[in-house]
Amino acid sequence: MLDLSKPLFYVDDDGEQFPARLLASDIKGDYPIVSAITEADRTEFIRTFTKEGAEYYDNPARHSSALVNRPPITMYVNVYQIQGGRYITGDLYKTPDDARAHSSDCTVAVGLPITF
Image (cartoon, one colour):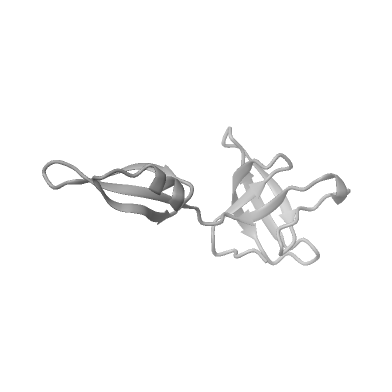
């Protein structure tokens, strides 16, 4: 079930994500959600979806596009203390182990999670 209070994204058959804007969620029938999807060139197109996010198609077996909530992304960063008592961060890593592998003696925090 989609959480309509959170950001929505349209995922096409190739797995590419596009921002989606909710237009209606109470249309009568099997596809009660209407959304405007913003393409890369900033134009929009309209699609209808089930409450679970499945897109309407005449032949659904040929398509896998859907409306989804973007899951939160967590990355990991190392924090370093530099001259003058200031702190800086380095690169973002996909796992705490990756962050740990790239830490050094001047690391204050290793693998600090950042979620966005």
